[in-house]
Image (tube, helix red, strand yellow):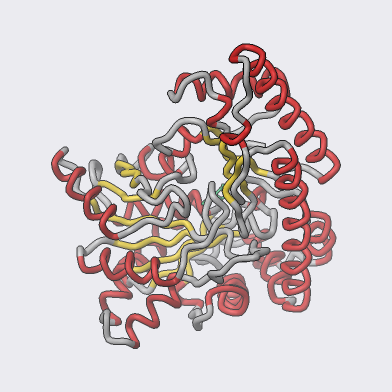
Length: 404
Ligand SMILES: Cc1ncc(COP(=O)(O)O)c(C=O)c1O
């Protein structure tokens, strides 16, 4: 349950992609290293139709082998070693690798003051920039993930607008990772809004110039999550930044997607009827698994943050810690692994400042296996509480009861 991977709907993709496998002679030749025209057209159309809410020009798309490669190339192009990237915490643990392993960009986790919604504020960002500066780190970038990993929540449009305007005013690049944009199953008061739409609106309202927006605002998307196709290694960057587009034309060769894969994928995405039916059915399955998981948490009085998107649930196991430290969090993680044979992602790996939280991915297994995993996890929690009760002489059930 620690891998951000969905197997829930691959049966549908599997059947479809097999029927899209033709091999024209051109697949044997070098192609455009920003991605072939056919796939750039198909992915643009899919993005604009299904989640972006703005026109997507295929000439603004750079295709690479997964969003991981997109981020690596993006940081290489936009940052110098030692520059900083602001990221609202908790965040996807692998971002650290994506930005630092080759590019030596320093992640700057920004902790939320509001620990009920975890919604970041401009004030927190500003403080983080100043704190980084005092350590000699110059922030160059704001990276937001929407829908979120590990929270599975959506940022309100007003928050995105505030962050966007603040960041561009400070001359920061804004990268919105929207890799889960087609995995939404509500109920949520705030519908998903792409940063591209927020940017377009801000330009129309005269709050931002079109030139600045083109230079600084970028979005990443990929096939790994919503379509469960992480093994295909396909991701893309949407940018209007001319230097970046030119850069990708050359450097894209280091992380290009094979023409064969591009061709099959283009055929699949061109089938709008398939895409729409797939997205709907995938969200139905995600919702079913999410509900199975959260019902079992509720029955066991385990607290969690309500989610409405992506494939994660943020579980609060503070009450099972022996003390409020990351050592205790680590010990609890090991106990869960040993006793339940379940691997969770600890909050510390997601750079969350308070010990005791875990990311649970509920889409990496079939519902029948998920039921077993839930039973083990809740059984483990109950056993720990019983032990504590007999040790302490009383059970403080209130601290375990969910508010949600
Ligand atoms: C938010 C986010 N971005 C990027 C990635 C990387 O995806 P890819 O398989 O396209 O490299 C992941 C994978 O877990 C993710 O959760």
